[in-house]
Length: 275
Image 1 (tube, rainbow, N blue to C red):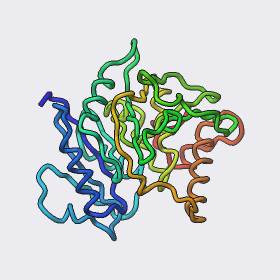
Image 2: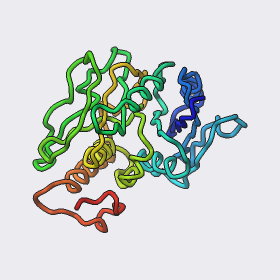
Image 3: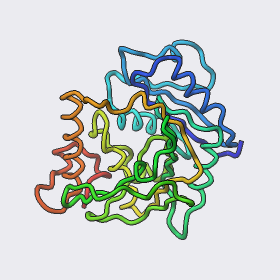
């Protein structure tokens, strides 16, 4: 072991036992010399995964009293454990054996003076590797509009993102990302008000960039995404409502013009509010 402690956090919602076992096995098969603890956040009290009902060495668990959402599950794991890095592993993703090694090598090699707070891997689906523009995006928050995808197809080197403004607000997706615990602590952790899911990736990226950190889309670290939990082609009315609610929450949180809600309005922690 290198002395580096990594917490692999798997928020569980509905993945069947067999798939969850595959995910856990893939995390345990990592070639990295870091010490890896695995925590499963059982986020559905009505569907506790079977893997948590039997003794399982090295596997921690957190059981939430109700569905606290994606950000809530990550925040529960962050607060309950002490580690150098938090690794977000979705319940339907299989990291390649050298994925963590690649993420660690990039998060510990800051470009210039800035400290890298997050490295996000490339995702491989049944159709092949997702282009960079689908792993990161740029928003114009002052206008509330989507600007463009971040990056192109498959860059020859890692995409280093720094700087932030209302007009150029870039972000990377959290799925598969390795995150520096001290940076998360500095920005106040994950904003659990983005419930049940959606736009917490953007919010976390924005706050890291505003704090002066760098985020990276890795060229080498890869993770297979089974697309089992992806958005359906025909989302329900509730799913659409939640999506647009969180989108407006994001814009309202950062927008320079128009109504600026207070921290009390939206329940943000003090570390997450804007000056």
